[in-house]
Image (cartoon, rainbow, N blue to C red; front, side, top):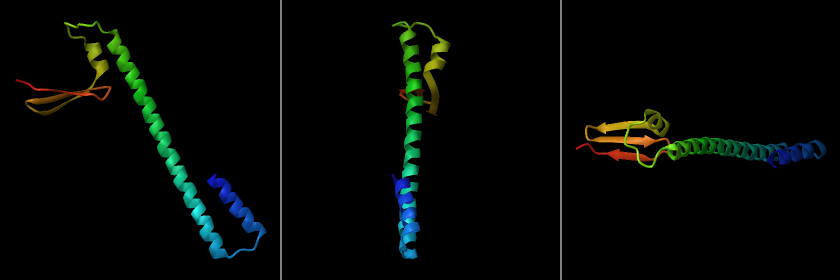
Length: 110
């Protein structure tokens, strides 16, 4: 829509004699409006891309969880690497596991 307004402004300037200062002011305002809309569009596209990636990650995480038996009494390295994103050690008694679904689980060592 902003591009149409800019084109209309340019066309009107070509057909009708106008005050250069007023024309420049109007044109600049339209270009600024266009640039703001363009920047916002890019923000939204980036957010959509991030959400899609997050959804894919969550679907993979859920697939791994569904494939596990209800009760696990052994360590499964493949499941561990598929589910855990990273481990943060804040101190000797404060270790936190962050899963790929972004859930954080604190553990307290005794």
